[in-house]
Length: 202
Image 1 (cartoon, one colour):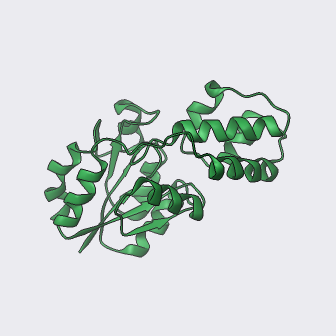
Image 2 (spheres, rainbow, N blue to C red):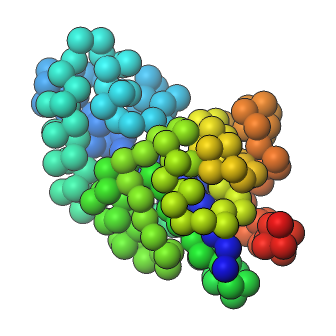
């Protein structure tokens, strides 16, 4: 049995628009008008950290409560599964492996996102970012690779002791992910299916 780890947002699902919508509504609740432009470069970073970066001095805890309310009650903004995600997860199961999602989303939000997307994964761990993702992933043992769209996902892979596969479905391109430490990069999750036998044998 082996484990493949995944980031969630912009790696398996595209929750970008729901994140942006919830964040803008939370900012508005606190009296700030913030559009997409300053938020997009921070996709994948814990949202309360983003809020403090975008609006210095904001009450991060209060913002986070409003953000969670808006995100959890949004029933109209779609969160599509990224192309190739279901195919790759099925290939991992067929090869005798398990898939573990480790996300910066809080635990309940990460579990809901996976359930809403109908993704068949072995486990979901929320509330971790960067290196801490790798520390969480190590608990599952025999980790062969970690897939993510963010440069900080390279830190997660190093902490887990496995290669990082960069996915260019987020805000970072091949060059940025490679400089961060990606062993390889893909533009489509289905491209990982052909790489899977090599990682399964590691």
